[in-house]
Structure formats: structure tokens, C-alpha cells
Length: 137
Image (cartoon, rainbow, N blue to C red):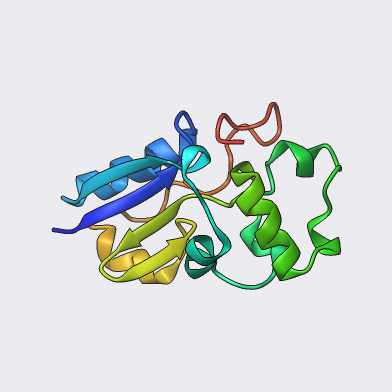
């Protein structure tokens, strides 16, 4: 099985569920605290799934939920700079496996690593979105 680098916010409900899925598929995880990593533009850019700030920013980040930051008003480069400065803005998880660098748990390239997981359980949408910010926010 694979060795997977998993960048998370410790305590995030969905990141915990995602890790269990990968471990159940037989993979070994090296978990990293996304918020404590020394990110640079060059290091973060390869993980990003698109150049659309709405797709790469964590919509449950406090600044976005409060309305202090509007992803639709940002350029890709502007969003990238903000994520480097404040990693809570990065949509999670970031995953490095088998030469791939992925953002989010819904990237189709992750499928070969998911084992027998059916995908029936939603492990992407924050379960606390309607009440309080996800512990992953």
C-alpha cells in the first residue's frame, strides 16, 4: 500500500473521517498540521485544484464566513498569497501520494487509494456548517 502525506487541521471532523478511510484501505499516513507548515507560493501551488479562488479556498474559514473576505473578488495569485499567509484559508485536506499532489477529498485521482469505501458518507461538507464553524475551520 501507499505512504500518504496528509495535511490537515487537527480536530477537523471530516479530516478524521478521511484519514480513517485511507487507513482502512491499508495505507500508512504521515499526518501534518496544515496550519503549522512553512508554506510558500512554490510549495502550495502544486496542490491547488484550480485557479478559481472559490474552489481552492476553505469556505468555512472564519474570514470568509464573517464576510471579511470575498473569494469572488480575488485573483488566483491574490488567493494564493493569502493562503500562504493564513493557511486556515486553504481548502483541506492536501494530500501527497504516488507523485500526485491533491487538494480536497473529492479529487477523482484519489479514487485508487480509497479501497472499498463506497462514497456514500459525505466526508467533504462540514457537518457543522449549519450550526457552528467546523472544528476544521
